[in-house]
Length: 323
Ligand SMILES: Cc1cc2nc3c(=O)[nH]c(=O)nc-3n(C[C@H](O)[C@H](O)[C@H](O)COP(=O)(O)OP(=O)(O)OC[C@H]3O[C@@H](n4cnc5c(N)ncnc54)[C@H](O)[C@@H]3O)c2cc1C
Image (cartoon, rainbow, N blue to C red; front, top):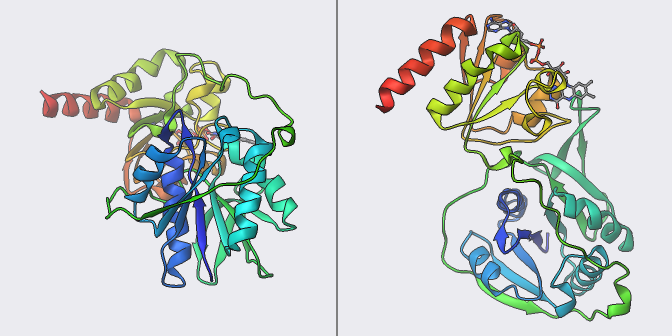
């Protein structure tokens, strides 16, 4: 392997959590040839994010800089990365599986006549990449069969970001040639959700409620527990489908993907479509009256019991411990 690069993404100058997870994945890949992954930051003024990235355990950081990269456009990012990849010939380019990457990475791979292995959840020796198929019912394993760059994007929550600081790595600059005429789109204002929008993806503690709660009137029970813990409230799909909680609080294949330190699943059976959204959590605690519920297969701790007895007692115990 001659090199693994990972593309860092920022939102308004802040590097995303998903980028750090991609760095962890890229380092797993690079370690197979005894190396560290190198990072790429792209933009018009990348000094600050390059310096931050340089302390996060990467081999080196390359700043791909051009005034026309000040705002994201698929054409600009594709042109800049294509030139860099042709010049450097890395073996693997790893991306966070973000909306932005989904916008331009397939075009980039196509320009180089290569494939993009998207939404990867694990990297094994070989390297072999695993990704979920058919809403998580099956998993497929993929291997790059040709030499030349292989593009890989990693699923949110699948790799654990390493928060350790390291000595600052070397920072290099690559200046692509981009002509304004190459950029066919005019960037608008970046999309911002309404102020109520919940970013469950960056919540450290989540209490998630499922159909076991029986009716909307019982929700204050779990809301109290979430408040006592200082956690965000999330839900399985039926709760959101019923309109008991807004869709932005749904976790799963058609909701958000989360990776908190603690995921407390209350009255959730553990259907595969729910599991794919939360199985990357660091510690999963499940409360369910059915000892055979599939959620217990992914749980670190399980309480088999009636949530209407367990939750008030747990909330009380947490309040007492915190007072
Ligand atoms: C295309 C598609 C996409 C989907 N996307 C999603 C998604 O993004 N997110 C998602 O969550 N689902 C999704 N689903 C739905 C998914 O298949 C399940 O139907 C759903 O996750 C089940 O939600 P649940 O666990 O809350 O309910 P149930 O499966 O009904 O489970 C309720 C659980 O509560 C327990 N329980 C009941 N009473 C009590 C009590 N008193 N105390 C303790 N435990 C109790 C029961 O034992 C049971 O295990 C999707 C389905 C499809 C087909």
